[in-house]
Image (spheres, rainbow, N blue to C red):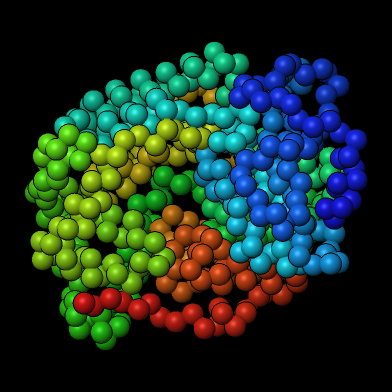
Length: 498
């Protein structure tokens, strides 16, 4: 596959453009192109054969005379001497996350044992040209996390940041309506056509499973199989359900602790005691004083249940077994872990990479479909986390951002007979198992695997590559449900008790 692509590209000039702005307006007869580049986003092992280059596409396909943009792509050659001609195309979650750092770790990707593996950046993300960064938003979020800032000041900071970032991006020539899931799916389809790939497989995680659904609906003819790790259905209204999803995941973990002799012996009645504690702290916040390492001053935080539930949300798959132990520390007023987490808030803003992309996607595809009434109900539904805010960007911020709402069909289930493997972690509070289950009646040839006691995106759990093995086995035979030895050997969670 790779050698075929190399031959097709040998006559194409090397990429010379380095601007982070949209390219010049395209002619009316513009066609997408792929151009090789010597300069890569990351250092690649010399033993790994690959092509790196940029896909040039329209910024907004509804404006054929508009600007074009450049999207970085890696095409990695399989370790097999005779790989199938259906490569795997991979893009990560988000929206707003970059795929390109994965290029450094091809030795760890089992998929290359059999197939070529293609990484494509989502438009607007860090290594794309242009990159929709929002340092203004990052700075506002940093200020908002400081205990001295009031809720009213937070709203003002975020709205001012959205306006400042929007105006800067528009002045640079960026069309914010060109950055959404439909356009990303069309980018992948353009890449497939430019490289003359007759058949391919999709590997997607979290948000990018929405990209997979759009591709299956709008460009199905070349898709051989799809893996959706931690799927987010088009039909799901994320913010309406996120608090329910969080509490169900916490309850499941605590129920597993109660079922475990060692855990319940060490921490009897943990669920009841923890939920009562969260409810008490929602009414009478926990006072925690932390030294600001930037200036040596003591800062005072007032933490409610909605803040303290982070003992679960911040835990990775590798750390879920520690959660009951950490809860017990809280109940005994051992605040060492809480203070450690709070000190991270003083480290400064993160730069806002991809945040403009996230704003465009969210404000066009999520916010317009969420019911403000239902969200208001979820804020007060659970006394343990009363006041919790599941909203990513409020309507005022989205009105400032000013992108167009997508069509109603982008909030409707996709029907397809393409083979699909849906993967979940049992403790995933971000994209719960029930969402994958809701998709299965519409996906005629779908299978569902749940990883016992794991959290979000099992295929990216580096400490145990079983999720990757499951996906790899499915790509090799998408007609059967994969069940490798590693999956059968996954045990009950091991709870830390001392």
